[in-house]
Image (tube, rainbow, N blue to C red; front, side, top):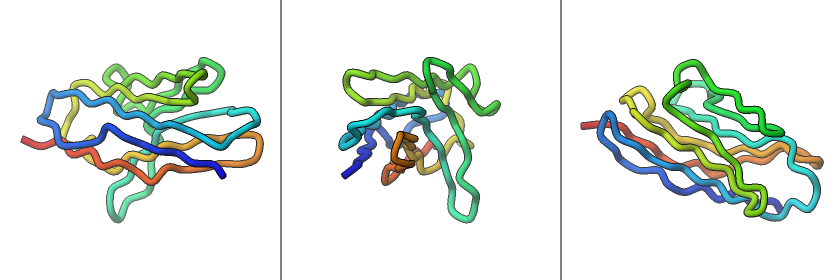
Length: 114
């Protein structure tokens, strides 16, 4: 059974930083792509960042502020978020695309507010 466990969300002031982690377990075949998405109530889920084969892709709104990285040995993907803005407030979801399909985490809340 594939499991994605996210952590690292919370409340932070504007300009602050957070680091999200997502540990993936239960996948015994290849992982093609790992990424982070975010969603607010009533809105569509949007891409934040993905990493695939070392190639990183970022939403324009986070480019230069967020960094995605991956530790293959730990099957973990990270999202370092710096210079956070109130508009970054959302539930952040981890996603993994692998040889048997796609799985999502349960989400972790990030709130940027003074």
